[in-house]
Length: 182
Image (tube, rainbow, N blue to C red; front, side, top):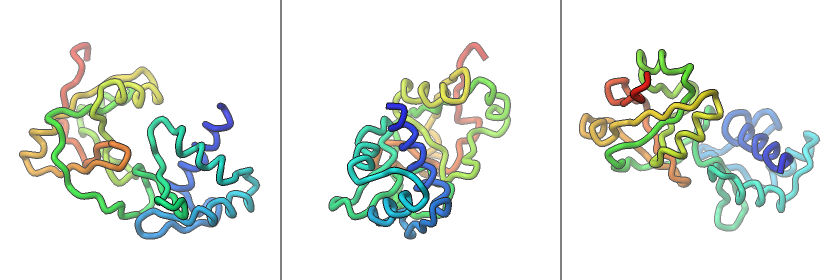
C-alpha cells in the first residue's frame, strides 16, 4: 500500500505540476499518451507498467486521475499548477460547500478569503467529511462553510471536475462561515 501511495504522488506531481520532471509535455487539455507516460517514467528510473498505472487511477481515494475510454490517454482531473484547459462548464453549486484547511491558516483566510495560489482554482467539497480529510493533511483540521449559493447570485462562477470537486477562482472572506471556537 505504501508503494501505491508513493506511485500516486509521483503521478500527481507529473500530471498536475511538473510534467517536465520526466520530459513530458501535456496537451492543452492536460492529456498525455499513456504509452508516453509509461516510457518516460521507465527512462527516469521508475518501475511502472500499465497495470500499476490502472491500479493507481482506480484506487486513488480522491479520483484525481482519469483515462480516456480506450486507455490511450491519461490526465489529472483538477489541481494543476501548469497551464491546461479542462473544458469545464459553469455549474450551479449547492447552497453550501466546504473547504478543509489547517487551523494555522485561519488568520490569513479571515483576512484574504480563500485564494487559489499557484493552482487554477480553489477546491471545495460538497461534504464536510471530505473537507475535514483535506484539512487534516496540513495540520489540525478546520472545516469552513462556503456560502456558494450567495456567491453565485453575486456573480461568481463555479465548476465541477469529473471527480466531483467544486472549483471557483476565489472565495472572499465575506462568504465564509468559520467554526464557532475561533
